[in-house]
Length: 259
Image 1 (cartoon, rainbow, N blue to C red):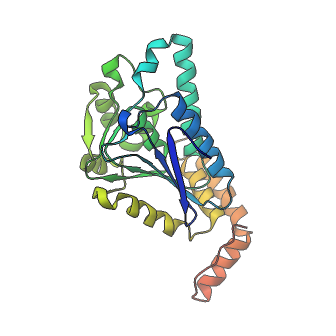
Image 2 (image 1 turned 30 degrees about the horizontal axis):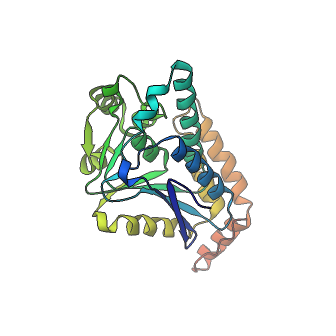
């Protein structure tokens, strides 16, 4: 499918999704969000795709934020609806049963930082910058940024970034636990694909179960523990588990089939 603001390509069961508005530093607008929603739905539904890599076009920006010009037409009801729509899309990414990782090349600000945080984890280039500067506009993040940033780096650090509206560089983001790795920009996509290639050798049902359980880690009560035990019971009766256990005992590589 052809998109106005997104370029996609697939190789070795990995879908690469590139936000393609380099003249606007890949800023999120209505069209980007609508097209990204379609891409994510198609990715999840496609059995030939096992993982996705999300990045931005060019070397300057992953996504430098939202398209602020669109905000001038919003009243309170429209603003709430926009935030809810963005939250629903980002939750769809976060809860995808296949890994989606962000390859952050340059600025990841505002909605861009929120989108990166909605991915299952993040790889950053050395020139990456992260921030939630919405307070500078008299706003706060609307696509889940206040929640995910707090969960990822802790309340104190999150509130400092949210309240001051400042940026942090890639090394600081790594030290905070916001990104998993920092690599030279030239090797960013290769590094991300290398990680996904390893994940793609694992049992798909187990990968999906790990994502689902980990996403419940901050839920109240014992929800995450209950889901973990329930999923363990379901998985141990699958063909993939039998294959994995047998392969381990026979000292050979397992061949998983997703069943």
